[in-house]
Image 1 (cartoon, rainbow, N blue to C red):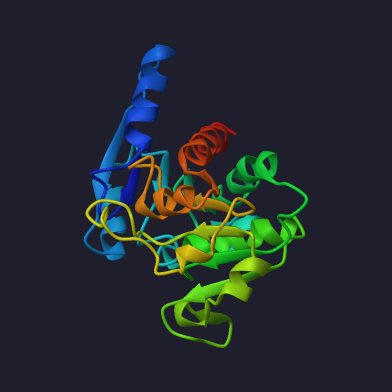
Image 2: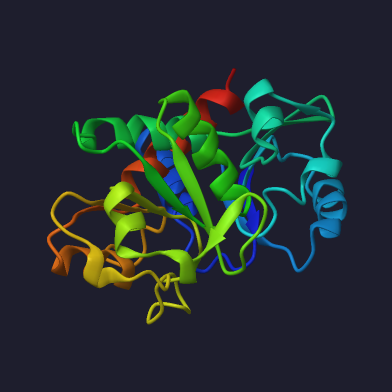
Length: 240
């Protein structure tokens, strides 16, 4: 058995993807959704389902799950967030496939003028994106609701800041159900055709963030291709 933990899970990509994969390959494996009210419910879950060999981890547990693991892959350790767990002989090993999947799907979109990035959000997903950007040698600025030591606030996003940052990545849940009518509060009027907007959300396929960017001529990319890359990476990890 495999599955995904998080909250909410009603719009999760992984169950449908893996169930179709197992059916196509004629495999007896199962993939289930395990919504947890709190990460402390992980231990009872695994005790009640000793046949679980792998889990995906989504919002809001990518960082909170760390104390519940026995080991971390070096990438997950460096990022400080986990979205994939392999369970073997009772040992739980945490991996992060967000970073390589993001880099894999971002690279084909990059043009010469895509030199700096804005990362909207500072959670576990943002940490993986930052790791990938460092690997790609792309300077970045974090954006948060409140100004912090490592991040600027949305109020500081001027025309000059957006002109200097032509890649904008949304790592927040704004735009995902039930927040489909919301979007990060950036000054969209300052966007243009030189901008690339990447949203980690895949459902809906065109979030309000992407819609408003496209209306200004920006290139847009949702999280669907990244999720496929993540899923295949998880499958490889579970079978390694």
